[in-house]
Amino acid sequence: MADPHLMVVDDAARLARAGADVVADVVHADGHVTIAPATGDTPVGMYADLAERHARGDLDTGGVSIVQLDEYLGLEPGDRRALYGWMDRTVLRPLSIDAGRVSRLPTDGDLDAACAAFDRDLGARGGIDLAILGLGTNGHLGFNEPPSDAASATRTVDLTRDTIEANARYWGSEGDVPTRAVTLGLRTLLDARRILLLVAGASKHAIVRRALEGPVGEDVPASFVREARGSVTVVVDHAAWEGE
Ligand code: PGA
Image 1 (cartoon, protein in one colour):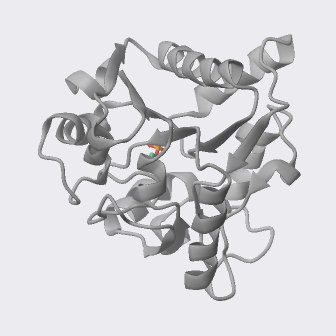
Image 2 (cartoon, helix red, strand yellow):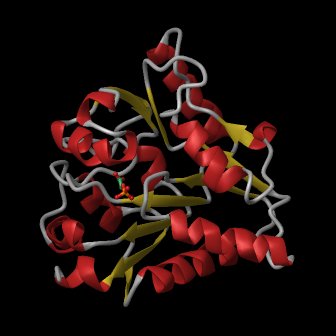
């Protein structure tokens, strides 16, 4: 069982650097790695830091494969809100990872069957080496909304009101936030060889404390990182940890 390694850092620049150091370690230790990268605001600075390392020739991403962590459902092709597009802009292009090395979550057809097949294929390929995760104000990881149990599979979900309110800032208004999504399940995430959880800002204070110090359970899906199979690093900025 994992004992999360907690790093409390002063500010956004240090969070970005500390996170990027973890990612670079994983990539350097084993050239062929499968990474599930979170979208959202929190990891953006870290991806920019990694992109600078890559541009300088200090981070070879030639062996990196990507697994999509989550995606909205019900979007038309080319919709600006697609999380694949966010990942493409902030992770794939800056790190020279082409689309052929990305496993995209299913978004149409028989989604139950497609999600089950996705988990089977991912498992057969050895699962995830590094899951880069953000923390929802409701305690979600990916779109594993509360309640989500530790064995939950990749599946479709209805987003909670908390998530829709929190994500309105990306897209304009609450009415612009899709209400359904597909997410890697907690089972797959908790099975990763390494988890990097990034948490920033005073709005995450209560939930990060609940996740790391409160009871472990499905009401705070992120609390299950304390029972993850692999090693867990949590990088939290001062504002989130102290609430000020
Ligand atoms: P944020 O999103 O990084 O934009 O705060 C985190 C999340 O909802 O998982």
